[in-house]
Image (cartoon, rainbow, N blue to C red):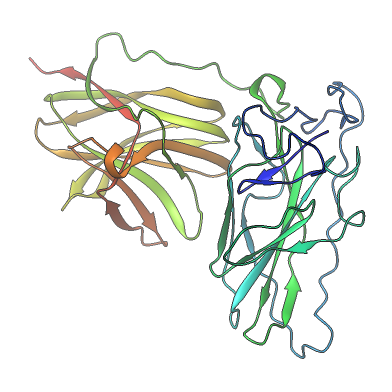
Length: 361
């Protein structure tokens, strides 16, 4: 029996006495390219994969007049594969719709109601309160007043899908977006369309550790990429050694292709101009300090620089800490939005990183 915890609420057959338990990860299910297992069985490689849902034709709510347009979905994108482990938090994001007062996000799960089937059509959807205690259900419809909705936990390594639509101030529902499907798998069981490089945890042999922030425990994660207009994530740091920066290590989890890391100088504490970059085509990481080597950037002791991360497909989370846990004094987390890359920084957040430098003579 597969159970789904969303914001602390059981998302499965909730008569089960283990519903809501967060002590044991949910059962692994079939990633893309692997048979969707029946209840209580393990996936079998090389057989029929779980079906991809056919997006429904958007239709306006009867009697609503001119329906609001369907929101344009952003993340998780259609076909995204997640590789994080329990509790598997997720954030659904989309573009705003003119005239919308609220939004509704329906999330469906494969296997949660009946093995090898989606819950849609088997159980009625249940609209959740905007503020208040969520209602236990197999097919939730969440309500949001912004263009994103976060859930604290997804059921084990198995498929899901989501769609979103707008609601105006009179309660009239607009056109629905199509279903977008995502999947979860543990790193050892993932099936990807290309080979992944091995981890590279060791810095260049001639360099030494200069700056670092190691959150313990990880209490914050920043999603890399174009999410709600954000193009890039950065962590600023103050060099402690004059010399050549050769490597940076970032505390990352997730899957994507490609991932670009750049070193920027700063003006007024904000990233300004790239001084060099490294791009890794394919990565699969789980709470790992991954080493990005090959930089040849001159740094000067006492000057502030920025590590800037961006990606073009799928998702990474850059782990860190906030508030009292953000204890790195030489910089902070920054984000850039819009095509003009308007940077803003938050002194209450730091992201996990290490820099390595070859000192000058």
